Length: 291
Length: 291
Image 1: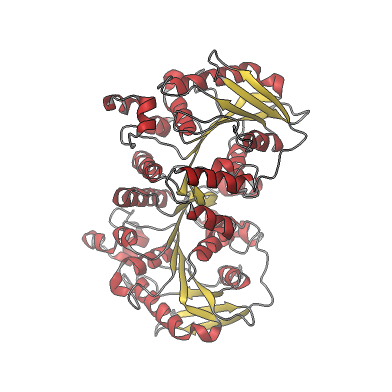
Image 2: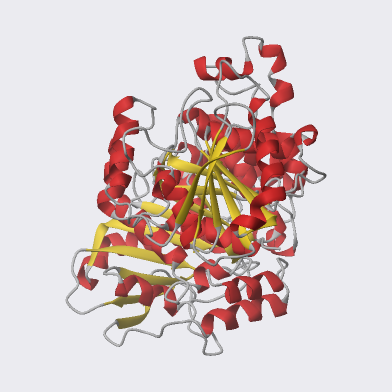
């Protein structure tokens, strides 16, 4: 990471304040390399009955049989979108990044709490996977190579889909990999803030059953997990606990990347920008775990 | 990492067999970018009475007040050298890498077990730090910016120097940072193989006092720790346990990088090669923790 960007991110701190979030978005909006004019976007493909069950597809003309990168935005379970309401390039940046790199990019909007609580996230992802397995080929995608990626709450939804077999669209999950940017794993020990309660409810006795730690340790789905140097404190704690549980159970170090210089938001925002380290890790992961 | 290198390293496995070690060296010998002809090398500067208390200094002409990167080779406490006996570029590659990047590079040979057991490593490092604090300026180095780096047993020696205050050359340790490539932290739970026993002795009751976990968690010295995707099993376990202990004690994720595609040996061998990811992380660390 360039020293000026490193210092600018560090100066924003780790708490999810409005200045921190807007400041991080501004840093990466100005570093975004622009959209590839060749990339074709199909907007608002429905994958379920809810108005939020929509996805945008990004592909380069002529691409066939391509890996499929699906991205779920963050937003504390209660907000967020696949497109910025104020004209920032997020998260078309992710779809464009995927398409530029020879993939079918998919950005997803999903149901939100408190109207839709657990397990609306993994349920929506099951519908996404079912829809792509059935129809991605006509958009140039290889339905056997779906990679689910998410950030923060989006990562939690992806982790929940992978770890809880009852939501799988088909045996094994029907996906080739999962990418978790700044995820919460142990719902029972996570900070039960207003966002947490909006999605998981007020009854803390139900939280443990929603955790993904054991399911992720047991899964055969290839994983790429990240935690940022300047991540929110509770997310750092969660990532450390995941490494601890994985190490104790398997005697190995999990695929948990600690992203130097990044904060809670920056990894997803960085895709398609001049700060390409996270993008390279994602491309390497997909290349290493291709069919 | 390029796909061909990634696949070649993965194919070598994780065990420290002779084919794995020689194979890894061969991969990076052929990828080494060569030595900078401008770099001046001062060989075998003595820092103590033992014949192994020698270091090589690497600098570009005219460099003054430069950060100092000290590198300790690995070799299971019982072998290894700052220079390959068979003409490979290791570990002048590290000194040259440092000098190319504007630093004073220092590669160190230290006393070996079983002739010299614990705490010969941190004792030797104290002598290195004292020597550089006193004399580095005449070689273009800034004695207030010494970064100690080591790999495997070399990392253990660096960690031991940082974590055990009784070995400090001066209060605080007299260093600006420590870089631990594939380190063992908890000597008591590490696999007590022949190398371990050669250095720490046969009495396992003494091992706990040699551990560095708590000292590293408590230190103010900036740290960069790494574990490799294909690291030796016990080193993966040690790294995971370090993250667990750090997370439990501090509620944060430690500066532990998981190096995609690398094995136990490759991070140190990669410095100055076309595979520059580890080198960039080290340069960023030093830049972020400069005086």
